[in-house]
Image (tube, rainbow, N blue to C red; front, side, top):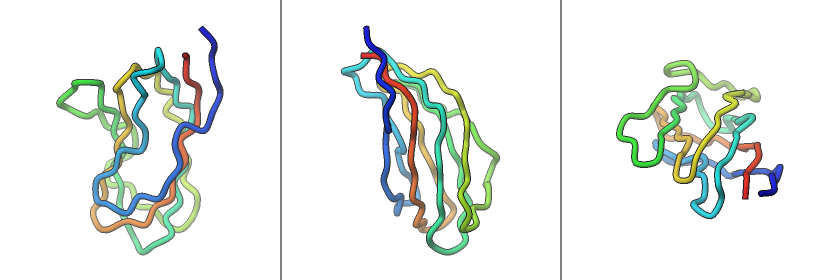
Length: 107
């Protein structure tokens, strides 16, 4: 099975709860090497979680209620994920956070 290095996700989070990346069911798995966040709006606090496929309880993978200024924030979780697993972000207010998720997928 080939491994593909790729940009896994990129968008702008404008909702209080956002799925940043979900491993497609069409691949065998993924490794997330880094998540880059840039706050382009007002002050916002974020929580970043890993949620296993079918899992009820998310696991925090970044500081609790981390304050995002306007600078680039880079998380390096090095997460090995299976199909349906996802990385989620919740915020304390309406965000304007641009994000990029980088890593590899095994197809």
